[in-house]
Length: 450
Image (cartoon, rainbow, N blue to C red):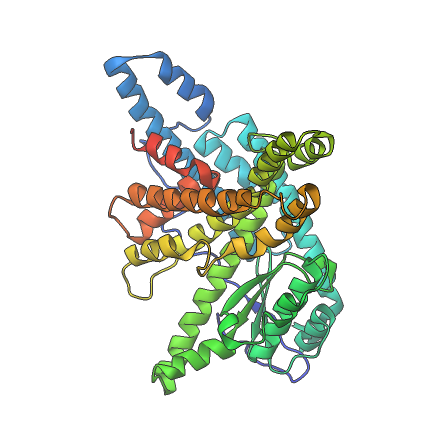
């Protein structure tokens, strides 16, 4: 990110986020050999059924053709997401009609089915509403100085997170998010603490103390909650203070220190924005296309009407499996964010090795620690403290979840096939970004013809 040209003590100009450069090439590529011809509709489910009706050599040939079209269309869906994002970056005031026209180009180019086109336009509606909420909230903190808009970052921080900032705050206006760059670690801690308190049913000592020690404070975070409801789920944060101190510990000084901090800061922004955008798209995907299985609300009904202890246990097993989709979504989000991130070592194979050991109980991303305790208390209430089947939590939120994550990471590794180049990792992300985590092995297996 470029530093603001001028920073006033009480207000500064919002920094701008550039168009995404992580995907090489133009959005629309000139080619006479596209697998799907312009104007042709390719419905993956219908086409696969037709492939499976054939046999022998014919089936193999048809499957190769199907796989090529499928990959091409998946790439088109990912490019559409990028195109819409960049259109909003280039013109924050772009209207729904212009976004719909852009989406229509992708629909024609990549043969989207009716269902895919419908989803695209629902996402556009949601993007427009999200931008509207963000700018309406932000407008209360924007003034003009020398003919340019300025955000009163300190006032915005205090309104959203209850306290005046202790250090300098920079605001980066993204297509769907506001990024807070904190020059003081205490401000980063305050953002995390307020988000966790507002997101909890009731404050606990664990929440109130989670940001006290330096080891518990990271470099970046997605902030789900704040005191300005129009910004809920639209904020990411960066702890520039900690990043700078870590670079200094490595002996960096002067220009080398500044350059390393700039690069690290840009990487944190990209990583956290990827989380925020993916989280938004995941929410829309869940709205548009329900997962297979029973909804949590229906399962709650099962729990209410279950009479025998065995019925209750069966209902709880289904309920917990359904709830575990939250953990799956978070793990998927984390894997995709790391997948397109350059490894500090320069060897992106190391990223996959890290992910194999990073998600699970007692690890860097320990979702069990936060998911299990509330359900443990509910199980005790439902069954009694002595009879509560707490082994369900260890099995579903622990063993089963960790097995799915390991299988998903292995599927990514198989999909890359030893090619860890940026282009290969982006292709893998494009293929998997709209697929639930638990289906990754099957998706990759089908794509590789296994």
